[in-house]
Image 1 (cartoon, rainbow, N blue to C red):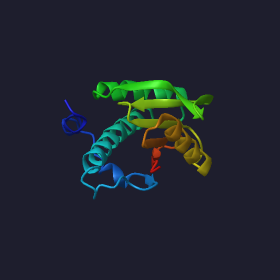
Image 2: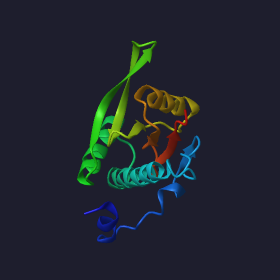
Image 3: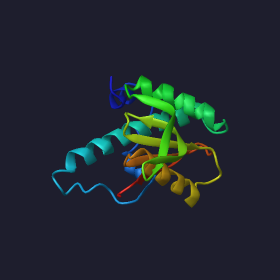
Length: 162
């Protein structure tokens, strides 16, 4: 059963489309180009499914837990919704063919989207920079930066256009 059908079968309110809940950073994939259109639409649909899982975790747990608790709950929710998700995913940084460092991504979904979880008063530029570094290291295009600190979850969609 898909996430939309599950939400409609319960008394929970259906959230508006994901693009109304947060901010998108970076340029969107060029969907005018027919070659990139299917990929961009698939990533949009995937990030909406992921965000529905994020909102569900936030609604059930509320604010106040440690980041690790939200990470584990999000992994459960993503998998319940039929999404392949891995946690603590190493991303190697290469320089001229040699490994010079590692980043550890909180969650990677479907090997396409990085999720960086935070429990901080507010998201800052350094959090966004961290997401961009994860994208560069992993070779992926889209990351979601999610903050569970407040009663209303805060998020940003970060797109690496390079």
